[in-house]
Image 1 (cartoon, rainbow, N blue to C red):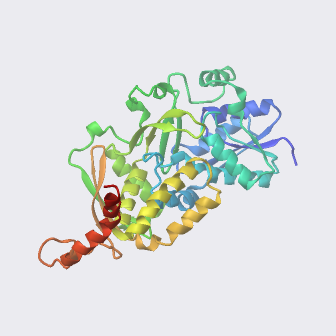
Image 2 (spheres, rainbow, N blue to C red; image 1 turned 180 degrees about the vertical axis):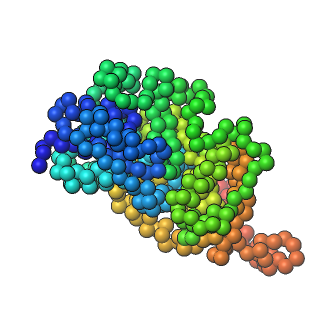
Image 3 (cartoon, rainbow, N blue to C red; image 1 turned 135 degrees about the vertical axis):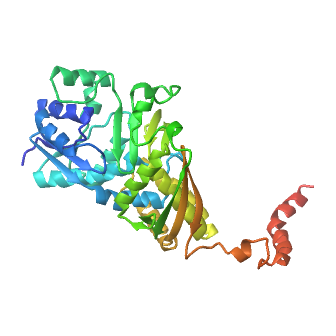
Length: 396
């Protein structure tokens, strides 16, 4: 077993590309591992480029189905939106990538794993906490955090060594993407006053040029999982992609957020997540139709907790598992159809139905057929307000 073999989480981007020769120059035998979680581009080409950069071995692991089943769908069932807006695009993939790194390390006898995260980002926490939970015996290396180079310095390092990279000073964005969405950082985006230039967006059309006619789409859910689009049954992975393309064509799914990072700083983040935001809107609407009031109120509180702990890198925690168990107790009820209305930059539920609906037309209507016992309301109101009334009396 080589004591100097390291498995690197390799994306093909600037930082992890430079990390390969940087680690090799320090005596490490680098195995580059790219994990396919639905990002675009030719990953096979990127994996081949890792060998040109100095890796002794490079691998591509197709984890798309696993990512959707074990990470994306639970996030959808929790309507997970950090700070009410960000659907955990990158946060969801880190625990899965960590599992793959550990698996490859065990297979190859590596004594260390490495990631390409900076010292001020969230991902360093997500990777290292997950790796500590999965394989506390493995050494964790963070070359980008350790080498002390800024982004311009990193580009210069690559150019000096004639490394095959795509990032340049004129296009300095740092991008992370998977089936659930896309995040964009750096460059002009670091100025929170500057509007994002249109060239940062790739999966959403400019809402100003989207069709004013709009479109409606119908989604079917089984136990909180989307299973059909417009009556056609689809695997979750393909359904998410299809919804994302439709919603993105209307310019829906853009997020421009000043985000509270785990390390204590505020950061300007830009995201595109048309599929995620559309499906969360539909799922949440179906829950409003099918879940009992007290349960739903408690679930909304737990959604915030679940989202926070996943954002903070605590996927492998007993609290996350306990909340998942709570939610699974009612998931069967979240079955039915939701109709979404898409327009330029917008997405709204406009129809919903379910065999488990708690909505009763006879109770809700004000027209003929009203079955609500209005005579019961007066006593209810008196009892409901009794504690407040007694408090008021005691203060006179």
